Length: 161
Image 1 (spheres, rainbow, N blue to C red):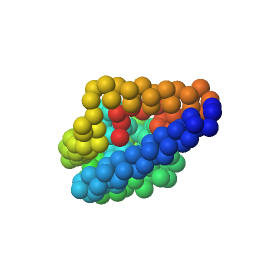
Image 2 (image 1 turned 45 degrees about the vertical axis):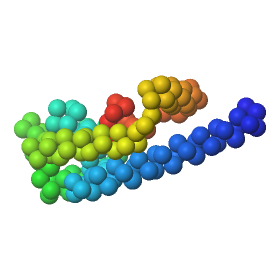
Image 3 (image 1 turned 30 degrees about the horizontal axis):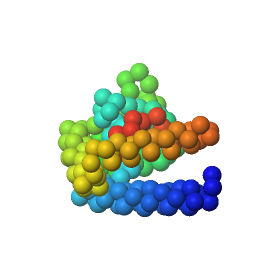
């Protein structure tokens, strides 16, 4: 890569990182309105996308975090009435996590809030600009994957948040 392209690439990466930080701050402002932290929301979303029920062990593996960290998050979510935990009938060591109706409603509200953030972020962009942006970001992601870097999002779909 020549120096001009390297400078442009550095600028693009800086803007990408700035945009990510701004988007993250906007999302956190929305989850704050719901009384939950972004990481708690992510756990709720993963749970919702998997039918509203998982074991604590499955949850830790999907989120790629320690069982102890999952336990702390689950305690907060349970205290807030967003989930409930029960012992599995066939194994007293296994805890089943279930979304409550309130948890499902919170996930729906958050999704609508996040759509608004995305609409704001992409406001004024044409279809062609969005297509070009998607193509560029996809190429960047493919380049990193080809260099051996793994997706840290535990195999989640692109629209999981």
